[in-house]
Image (cartoon, rainbow, N blue to C red; front, side, top):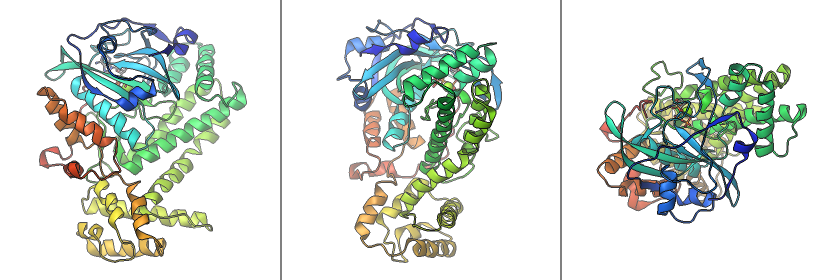
Length: 484
Ligand SMILES: Nc1ncnc2c1ncn2[C@@H]1O[C@H](COP(=O)(O)OP(=O)(O)OP(=O)(O)O)[C@@H](O)[C@H]1O
Ligand SMILES: [Mg+2]
């Protein structure tokens, strides 16, 4: 790995240097060749294993934990920081640099009561979902590997410690800005320094002045809106949308109790610690805006309020337009040339009615969409229709859909296009769970198979047909806790 150390050298005072404690008997549980390519690595080897486990120093690496704060479940926590994640620096790859972080590498000055560790099951879930979201074309942090160990850690019971090696275009979160606005008194100079660093590193087309700041915040709003639209389209519930888990670049970030929807349910809650459903699936668009408002507040020393408000006002439109674009592709609709507003409304209504029907008929979100890939759009009969129990309601919807769709000239091609946007395979919680149980029993085979499967979510993989099934009874509505 070849590191540059821009954050470390340019932003002293924004982190603490730390010493990883290391892991006993480290071993590879998972390895992503896609992740390796991003930072110019070839194969896993023992030096790398010991380095990433924190047992040996990696050449060129620094070891530091960043400071940030954040709004957690609506309340402000004035000082969080990397309590269990140690950053080694930015590793240079063929298409840019990636922060390398060891999540679960031991305590830091920000660990508070925590042990600085991550348990194997949460490390495996983070690894799998990072790679799965990427291959679904959703912006996300990536993963290089999971390293298992003999080290015992205590949660509800004794478990073993592991590290996810995370790759991120940046680890800067909304919470970084909140920290230097609210928690460090009189830190406007630092806030400016942080913003200028962010611009220079990630928005080189923007200047570090009032116009650049304004354009930048507009882009953060846009990227966040598009990210949340994508989550809604693919049926992904993040579970802990605290502002310290919001990447400034609009990448999916920090995976704990997340879930992909099985049966569609608008108010689905995946987080055991969220009984009121603040972060329920259907709440995500509103929470995205709420989080941006907290970020805007932290930026008031640098950007005029009117500019911040104007940017925030663009959130809903950006989100709806992106969502509409993704959902039209799923349905096979193309936007017409005239009366856009009217057509947007009609199409949104078609999408909304279909998801209501899915909920009423208790249908699987992913599998229902996948049916469009074998649909003859000119016929009234289909395997899609066969899934529904409320047939009259479905027929009424389908008639309006057919009218809107019009004549499809090349049906096989239209179907193939649907299969390129409606995935067959997603990371269902029960699949992750099965892989984790196998790892606990000493077998990483199922984890490797699942990882490879999720690299091609849109392809038919007949040998893995079973992975596209709805969960068995034990795996329905699995709710994860935050304890990880
Ligand atoms: N086991 C732990 N030991 C020490 N600190 C922890 C532990 N678990 C969580 N924290 C800290 O609690 C805060 C909130 O945790 P959260 O679960 O959002 O983040 P995380 O999953 O640990 O890390 P990241 O956001 O980097 O993916 C963070 O400051 C985090 O570092
Ligand atoms: Mg976090």
